[in-house]
Length: 608
Ligand code: GLC
Image (cartoon, rainbow, N blue to C red):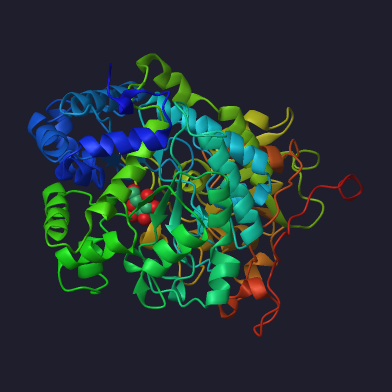
């Protein structure tokens, strides 16, 4: 007769209670600990063989660590689906075999636009572009495909969907949001949760993570992780609804905001993490810290004098799991010390560990802890059609002279200009293989704008490419692809909403030729173009960060195979004076350039 906790027929609560009753305090504290696998080992570890036994013994056997993660860009070498599933299965097997009670581990990753850590995975548009589709069903299906790819590679916890609000386009994570509107964001967050988890957590689900709770999207000055000054009314009207919608859809976990709200770091805020999240919103799942953010209460926020006090404040405020992410002993030692001193109650440890164990039971990990290696590659490559559909639906036609687009017809000779038309890094954006985007040393499968144009250029039309604008172009139309380099988090802050100088120069050179110029933006936010350039464009197309199939989607819209249907999920400011707050346009600083919901389509009578 096996112990009750091993009986899947029993209610999860009973299994949790039985298991907790058998665990030692160090084993329970291990469940509160999440360690970054690959970053700690560094890439050279992989050269010496898949896993370092001493590391595994310390982390998984000695420290009983309950979950692992691969932080942005950490990947096994070679970075293939087969290697991923081999590594995660090896780690899982080691963990279970070295756990007295056979407790499996969770494995977390940031799959924010497909399984974006794996080379040649299908990459979907980032959330901002999905917001422009206003299509929750599409978002749900993307969640479904992503979850399948994750489970097929042994990943059971996804640090997605982002539920932050896009209130300041200068902020480096604006593209990870669904735009400025709480209703739209809520619909999309809920759809993503349902897609990734299904109607209930099960062996095909991944645990979703609503991040970053809350108010992270309104940092002062649009500077990532700056303090957010938010009134109670704004907190409830703007920054809570998307989380509420995600919780109603059954989100399994919530990640805490690294920043502070009205001067109080979220990781130390019982009002946010217990009063609002637990008591008011009734959340019963796992709360997890963001990267090293308990320690950063001391080292960054200077909110507490010691690491021990940081652990004391965070765990008692309501953080269940610490994404440490490296010093397991430091964290578990501090918790054990605080429990012995009576500053953290064993009941609090049981509550946090219980949330983690309940999640493991619900994901079926005690019954089916391993992924099937045969399923990894097909699952990671699935969804190209869905990604193309999403990119097509996201592209937003901002302005047109009514005759240059769609191409074809009179435009027999099209010249495509700009490196971004043939380098997929800008269309893929951040969180792509590398944390800050596709590293120069790597290549991943993508259809670039130029690839796409070549696929759809009609017979009888000519298509040519140049990285710079030629002095006397013979083309009928010039398509200039400009945008932002891929970045993530603070590195992606853009305080002036400016195009990089080189991109702006390309636009200037193109309009200076006097030829009709179509500008395609591969951007993470609304950018402010100089009026004298923008007003001379034949058309302006916002493609956001459209993913691995994005170049084909751009080409389909430019050649009219797809009638553009994207609508802005945010207000496009005309001047910096309108930011933040352009969503309340017309603000004192005048009307925005394009309002929320703006987007044009080709209409037959206008395009003879
Ligand atoms: C990062 C991000 C968070 C991500 C985590 C793990 O710093 O803030 O969104 O899930 O660390 O990579």
